[in-house]
Image (cartoon, rainbow, N blue to C red; front, side):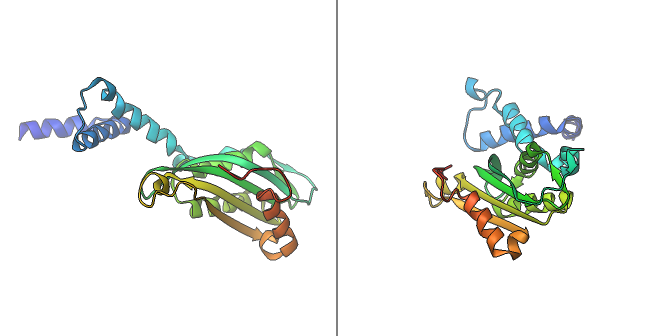
Length: 208
C-alpha cells in the first residue's frame, strides 16, 4: 500500500514530458525491447520531445500567428502561394503524411503577408490530423481572417500508413481540395486555380 502511494506521488509530480517518456519506455518494453541497451537509453525522452514538437499546432492560434500582418490593399485578383511543404501525423496510426499545399484567395480590400499563409498551413499540420480536415481548416482560417471574395486550397500528400503497412502502396498520392466563394461558384476562377495548383502548362513536377 505504501509503495503504491509513493508511486502515485512520484507520478503526480511528473511533467507531461516525463510522463510521456515513461509511457514510451513501457511501450518499448511491451514490444520486447531491452530498454536499457545503449541505443534506447534516451529514446523515451527523445520521442516525448519529438511528439510535443510535431503536435504543437494544437496549442497555437491562427490570429496570434498572423498578428498584424494584414494590410489594406485594393488588389482584386488571385493571390496564390504554391508548393508549401507540410508534414503532419495521421491521427489513425500516428504515422507521418507529408506533401505540399497550394493556397489562394481573392482579396476583398485586405491582403496578408505571404509568409503567414505558410504559417497557417503549419498551425494545422502540426497536430494529429486527417488530410481532409486539414484542407478545410486552412481554407476556413484564411476566410475568417481576411473575409476574401474566395479561397481555394489543394493539398497533395503521401501517407506512410499506406506505404509502410496495410496495403503498402508506394506510389499513391492523396489530393484534397476546399473551395469557398468565387473559387466554388465561378467555373473560370475555379479552373484557373486548379490549373495553377497542379502546374498545368508548366514544367512543374507534382511528385512529392
